[in-house]
Image 1 (cartoon, rainbow, N blue to C red):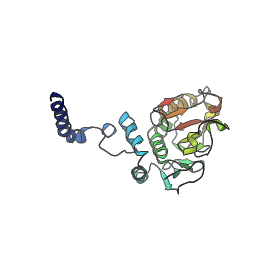
Image 2 (image 1 turned 135 degrees about the vertical axis):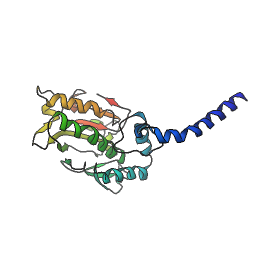
Image 3 (image 1 turned 30 degrees about the horizontal axis):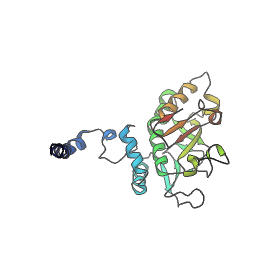
Image 4 (image 1 turned 135 degrees about the horizontal axis):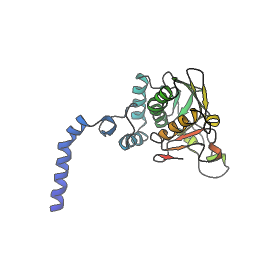
Length: 232
């Protein structure tokens, strides 16, 4: 009986405090608000993103709001059949004014996480640390129906579900191109900048693998959705 009373009190307390939480909690810590591309990363933000992975319509709605805000340009792509099917993928054209070396096919959560990462980390740190706005991001793709490391046997790569993007370089408005392969171990300002934005990526993706992980990632950042903030 005491247990039931305790549960009842907790439920009543939750009902009573919910309006207060909805009103005063910051967006990034408010589980009752829809995810926004400007929300700072938190475990609540990560929870919302994971929840959207099971609700394509809600995820697309968040992306549409981000597009209206100028954080991303995308189109809805048709479903993909075959050995590596995709349901409700999108094609990312740009991150607002930041161009891409080519558009890429992505799961909606990957597109959203990438828009948040570019908006909140790469763009501001390019301007403040490198002295020039970010102009373009170069990559070598997202969707590829293959196993991890292109092995004949083994588990499917995140790329097989369009849940990972491999970024190779960043180009600034002043024409400077900062490649992962060429600048990671450099002795100029580009190296600490690359390492800073790589470390920050762990807060937006499930996993981030870079040049220090292994030789296969020496020339790019692998930014994927699986996991919970793994950064190597």
